Figure 1: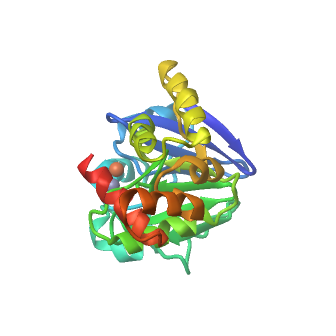
Figure 2: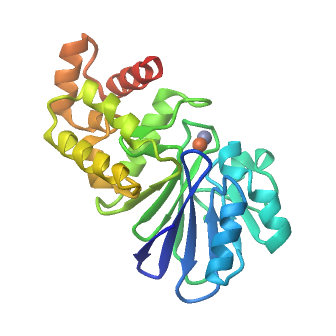
Length: 262
Ligand code: ZN
Ligand code: FE
């Protein structure tokens, strides 16, 4: 478990399943303890015991089993409240509180906002607390989620919302996929020195069994192939190399569909 201090709360990062991360958000000012996307219950239980605190809430970003499988068992044991997207209420096990961009969860001591970020799934949302973003399977280290339900245009719009956040915002995504994503990134963005530097740094982290997550908005803008279409110089070069339109959405769609075939 790794822990990161933020103003008003601490984020604890728990590895789970093969390559998931579950996050525990521990408020400074009260007993609020939130599990984001509990892929399973056991590691959350262990962490709660270690902290000597019961779980008060679960925040789900989307309905997939590797983000919700711990829901019912944790609710049974802790009586915690389960928060998820209004649009996905029917698919989130045990949901108690539905939220949208316009009606984020209201919890004492934490200033929480919600972004609707469809693309990976239709009801996918992200939670923002100060300088911490919990984005599930929307944005990954050097990658983005597959388009299981939404369109490329929806995902591009969702990624743009995320890219507008402050550059120092920490990205707590739900999977450790970074090295595999970086291999793809270097195949399509070979002449990017920021990417080359990131590959060295993140390979080192993994070699020492350290997470590459959290990343930051600035880091992703500089190196994530799915955010690179925000850079018009990158778009012109990519369009010329692949003989497609230099419009950012076309570039994003091409990079996304190539990744599926890669
Ligand atoms: Zn997913
Ligand atoms: Fe997932």
